[in-house]
Amino acid sequence: MNTGLVISEDREFRRVVASWLKERQWTVLEAGDRAAGLELARQHPPQLVLCDLLKPGGHGFHFCRQLVQLQDPAHPCVIIATGNGCAPDHFRSLEAGADEYLAQPLDLAELSAILARRSGPPAAATAPDPASGGVRLKFWGVRGSIPTPGAETAYYGGNTSCVELRVGSDIIILDSGSGIRPLGRALAAEFKDRPIHLTVLITHTHWDHIQGFPFFMPAYDPRNRIVVMGYEGARQGLQSTLSSQMEGPFFPIAMHQMPGHISIEEFKGLEFQVGAVPVRAQFLNHPGACTGYRLATPGGDISYLPDVELCQRLRANLDPDSPRLDTEARTLASEHDRKVVEFIRDSEVLILDSQYNAGEYQQHVGWGHSCAEDSVAFAMRANVKRLFMFHHDPEHSDEEISRMVARGRQIAARRHSPLLVEAAREGLELVLDRVEKT
Image 1 (cartoon, one colour):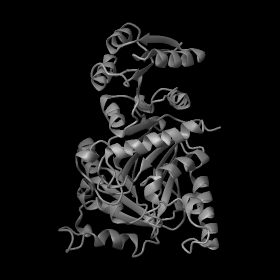
Image 2: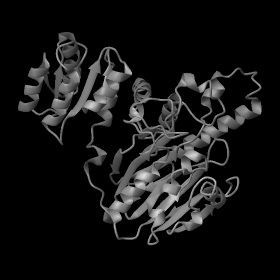
Image 3: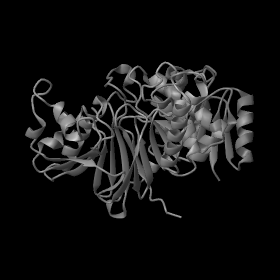
Image 4: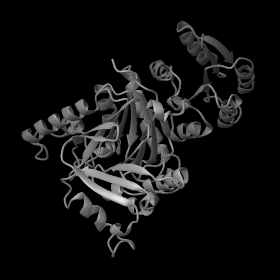
C-alpha cells in the first residue's frame, strides 16, 4: 500500500487531503509542522509528500530541499501547495526540487490527475539499451525567434530550437537552432576519436531553426558523416539557404569549407526512413514551407511541431464578418486543424508550439504560432500522452512559462484528462520504455 505524508499547520487542509487519500487506499501520515514532517519522512519513507506552504513558520523552500535530499536519489513525489498561486512560488518550488505545484484552494481533480500520471516509475529511471531499441530524447534548445540568454531565462533555457533523439545507434537531431552548439560539444566529448554518423531534420529555414549549424563542432571533423534533410519546397532550396548564412558578409567560413562529410537531402515525399526510424512529415500553418515530423520509435511515437498556428482560436474569436478570415479561409483552417489532430493522434510525446498565452495570441494572429491553451486542447483531442510546450516566446521569463504550465495543467485536470503537461527545458532528458503494440 502506498504511503502519503501530509504536512500543514491547517487541520482542515490535512483532514480533507487525508480523507481523500484514504478513500483511494493510501496509508496517510500527518504532521502539523515541517520538523515533525521531516522526522516522519525519515522513519516511514513515503511515496508522496504534500506540503502546505500557506502558513508561515520557517523557510518552506529550504524544507523542500531537505525533504528531497532525505532519500536522494529515490525521493518521494513532492507536491507543494501554496495559497497565492503566483508564478515565483511555482518556479521556486521547482528549483527546490518539488515535482509538482498546486495553488489553493486545493483542486482535488488536479491532484488526482497528478497522481494518475505519476503512478508508474519515472521514464528517466532506466538507462537506454541500444541493443533493445532504447529511446532517449533530450532538449538542447527550446526558445523561439531569437536566443535569449540571461538570468530570467536560465531555468527553461534561452537557446533556439534543437532536440536530440537517440533510437538504438541512430542519432537524429530535430532542427539546428543555437541549441545545436552545446549538443555538438557534448557529442564530440562522448565520441572522442570515434566517427559520428547522424541526421539533422530541418522543419523550415527560419533563422532560429538553422542559425546554430555553423557552430556545430562535429561538422568540422572529417571523420564524421552528417545528413541534413528538409522539404524541397524551401524558397531557395535547402542547400542554398543553409550555405547563404555562411557566406562572406555573414560568416568567416563557407559551408563547403567544413571538413566533415555533409550531405543535403531534400525529401520529396512525406514518408521516409532515417536509419531504423520511420518518419512522417506534415505541412503546417506557418509562413513559408514548414513541416512537422512524427517519428515512430520502440518507446512510442514522438511528434515534433515547433512552429504552427493552430486555427481553432481564429474561428472562435474573430468576428464572423471579419475580412481576415472569410468562409473559404475558415473551411481551410478547420481542415488544417483536423489534419494536425490526426497527425499527432496517440503520440507518446508531443513537442508543440506554445509561444503565446491566449491574450497575447490576439495581438499576433497570422504570425504562425499558437497559444498554450490551444496546445493543451489539441493534445487532449488527439489522446496524446505527454505534451511539452515548446518555442517559448523570447519575452517570456521562466516565471511566465511556469504560469503557462500551471494553467495548462488546470485545463487538463478540469477535463479529467490524464495528459501530462510540461514545458520543454534545456537539459531535460527522457528515456522512453518500449511500448508494446496492440
